[in-house]
Length: 101
Image (cartoon, rainbow, N blue to C red; front, side):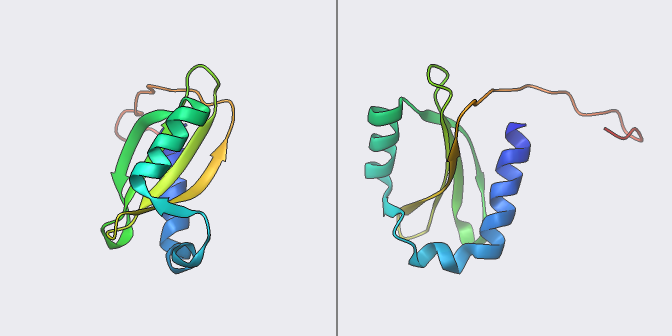
């Protein structure tokens, strides 16, 4: 599930990257991370490299179940991409080669 959420976010960012740059949901990374921690108790759960060398991160709280997906641009600005509830960390095995999921 987490991999699917992160993959979906990267795909969405690939399509809407320029639109995010103009959105009002961006701030310096330190402020965003501090706000996610202090207001929602969220910490980084996973990360990956997106388009244009952007960093995609998933923050979540096991206590509240809230989650947030962010993208940090090369200029250090972090933008909120998606957020929600009922976060659940999964460690699923990949299907064997030649077998569909």
